[in-house]
Length: 481
Image (cartoon, rainbow, N blue to C red; front, side, top):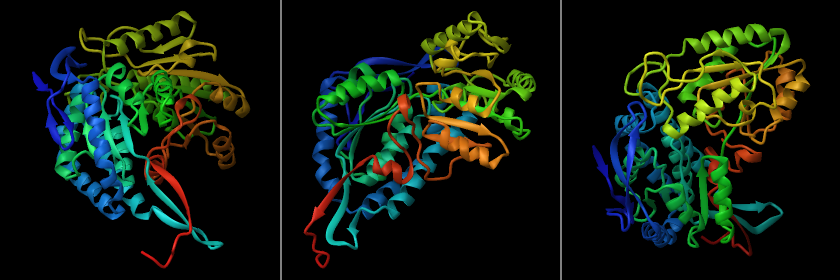
């Protein structure tokens, strides 16, 4: 049993002032493998005070030195690759190969992109040729509370820490209590990178405790949160009294529009993307909207592909999917699968219960429903499990209308060889991101949504913009230092 009870505050590892024990469960075995402490108000106050004390010096540090610190962070991060991969695999159930190749590498990718974006960022610049004595200055928002989820731990931590660090902000990180060990390793990495004391602080806690305390704290200038839409609304309300900036990256119910001229790998690509990370991704393409002329073939193909997706323990190497994160999530997914059956969707793969041959662990059978209608619960709610809903449409206009018929707006997908149609879809789909024909967004592209999927943009220059204030200055002397 691992015991990691300390917090990282003011550049040192400190014991909790009022911590309570919390068991970390391995979702593959349902057994506790670690104990951490969840902080209380005194711990939150200490971390915020350390960040506040460090803010003036870090804000005034030249951007070149802040960038150099993130370069050291990137190197220290790479040196702990196996530690991070094993921590994430055991705490949230990512198969070890996925943890190494996707979960870990996502963090290295984001840090690299922030370094490049920061070097090109316009920290101070003239307003324009018409106003030689006017200056636009980008300066740090201030003390930032970073509240991150369990499903892609390093992806989300690096997206926030990398941007905040180059922007000159100081930070208090509260990782998810479901995946705290990778967060602790990351704090060790920040320490090894040599950031000044107080620039980065870590307090473990849950949403109702440390999360709520950070959201309402008068000395916190900004909250950057990734998680559920429900929690995002609560954070926004808690932050309102102090008018702090709130950056939200929330849930999704992505549509994947498959037209008759889609490429031959489109269905397989869509099903496997849905099943990746056991469906626990906010940008998962969970609604497959299919043109009627190819609908029957697509349903048959999707069912066959899903039936071949293997499920296994996170510690085993291979291309299988692992468990969902905990009992609560398993119960939710099972309930929604049963609701899909009860509401009349046609089950073509998977279904309720544990996969064959398993009697423990939070494993879910890769599941596909056909003949799903827009009013069904599985078409409306974010399931966050390996469950795909397939829907039939007759026209492009109907596909767009159905894709947009959701309170969410994170990522939509389209599969068609018609370039003009792709451009029409890109403009018409109401989401922060549109990905077509399996082409990933390029390095530095912003990640974020609209509607109830949130209001922030993470990654590259857009991610830095979320952590800076814009200051307009008149009377600037362009000849002086």
